Structures are given as structure tokens and as C-alpha cells.
Length: 175
Image (cartoon, rainbow, N blue to C red; front, side, top):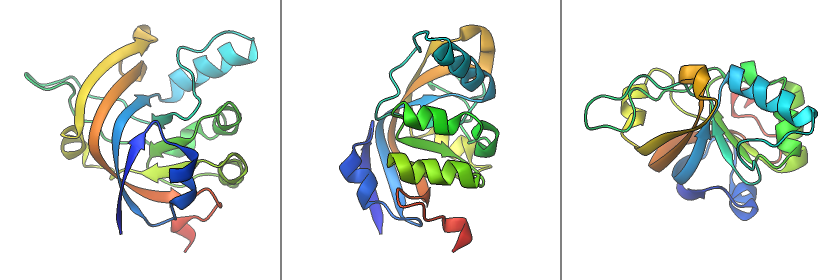
């Protein structure tokens, strides 16, 4: 059954999602990959202020290609989520509620998703050009020096994802 959900995501919506659900996200998400995660983590543990409030937010593990003329972004496919696993429980504790990527998550991350009532979505790897059609605007909000790994704010409409790990810790890949 297809579900349509707004982002940032609310706890009510998260609780209703089940591993295997097809979901279309509309609203605002933020991109961050390895280097941005590392910098945010190091900033937070030193007591510094992050470039965005993670509460209720969804982070898309994506590094876009340059935008084509007339488009806000180039290819917008997911990157492997497992590379962010060492930082994810910390950010979930800070209020992060959703992640979009591809691939499996560690047991530690799945337990943290259940503990903090979050959700992990997968976007289709290799479909970056198609996924970019759901991106309506893109702007760098932090770490511009990181290039494609800078944190971007994306406004998305009907962005297609699948729930892989739901808030109860159920994992679609293990079913």
C-alpha cells in the first residue's frame, strides 16, 4: 500500500510505517554523507552548534551531480547507508527521525532506530536521474568546502522510498 508522508516527519507517521511499505515523501530533507557526518559529530561532541536542528528531520545519504540547465540538481541517487552507521545512533539520540540511503544497517543502528522511534528508508540505487525529478529545489546550507558532500536542503515532492527498518526494528532485508 502506497503512503504519502510529509517531511520533516512526525512521530504519528513513523509509528504507522512498516518494513516493506512504499512511501512518497514531500517536504524538506537534508543531504549529508561521510564527511558531513564526521564534521557534525565532532562539532556536537565538543558542544558546538550544528548547522541544522536534527529534531524530526530526515537525512538523505546523497551526493548530487552538478545540475543540468533548468534543473535544481543533477543525478540524486542514494549512497550506501552503512558508512554512516558509526554516527547514526548519536544523531538519533539528538532527534533525527529518518534516513534515506541504500543497503543494510548494522544491528546497533537498527536497535537505535527502534529505541528512538525512527525509520530507515531506501531509495533505488542506480535511479539517480529518475529520483532527481522529485527534487524541486536544492541549496547548500553548510560545509560548502566539502563540495558534493556539503549539507544541502532539498525540497522534494512525491520522492519514492521503501521502508527498510521501521520503528519497531523490523528489517525488510531480513524478512
